[in-house]
Length: 201
Image 1 (cartoon, rainbow, N blue to C red):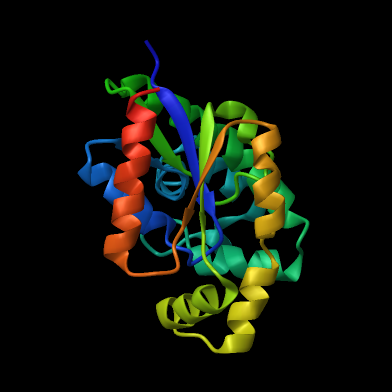
Image 2 (tube, one colour):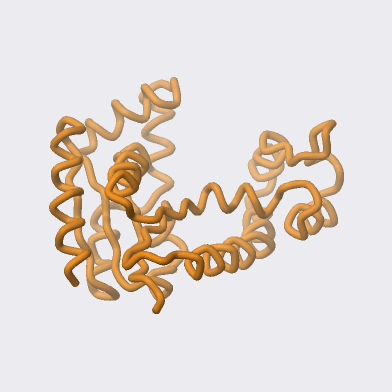
């Protein structure tokens, strides 16, 4: 029997990875889509080969691995390149995700997916967990994590969907919200309480 597929999403720097780690400590399988996106462009993969066919060897490092900085530069020059990259990589990432889900033997699997709402992927999941924090916390954490100034942090946050838009997810599937504005031990208690609810579904 397939596990209950739970999407874990939320704004940047709101603490999704900490929440995922807390669930992992409780024995829940975690699949991270950012990690899968790296796997599908490793040397020798079809994903990297297709990107090279389109953008040329300028996107490679000397050791033939993907030069992510070079790819970002290409994106900044011509934003429509984003569509090409997504058309190449997204189907491969989602296919890999489905393969990983099939390996899960436990009742729950959590898939950490930052752009769940932006990419309209709710249909792939049974439930969702949204990690939220207030704007000041989000700014402070992002500035510290990325070592950037406040304007840069605000610019990054502005490119993402709003908490209001994420909250509309509950029209598509059952949603639980974890407010992550306080200390880590309080967040861990919320995760434990939610785990008890989910495991008993």
